Figure 1: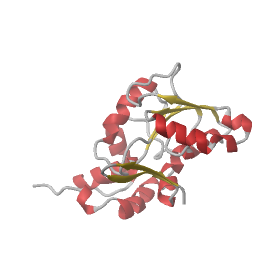
Figure 2: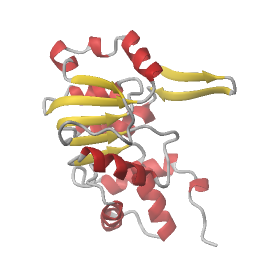
Figure 3: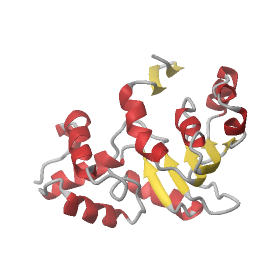
Length: 204
């Protein structure tokens, strides 16, 4: 298994890895990426490569704040292993996900800049990115955990109506509900495995 690990004086942390969870948690966004794609966070290049492989995608712009990550992927020659016409679609920029504005609105925005998988208020940060990029469709890492978390807090079943309402409340054109009729079931399965009880504070 490939993993990107950062070593600091206080210890080590895994920045990205090629575990099934890592790839499956980004697969939906990659599968439905179209047109001009903006990806926030380079990681090991998996999402960028798989989005660029789609014939419906014309360009992939990756925004990465850390120059060391960019250099790692360059030295690893990840994109050089793709067909030349696919690799030519990918551009990596050393920039900030919260301030980057593309030269034209994105058709697809994919955001993956956080650790860990769950972040209760992550959609607020994605709305900042969405406002700058104008993404027609959006997928962010861990969005299923946010939906499941809010359903638990409200005591609501994870059914189609609940998911539709919670997605509407996020005010983001999320990839997922319209593409997968079984999206509520997928959220339930993922949440049962990855959303720990500690992530869901109980009402006072």
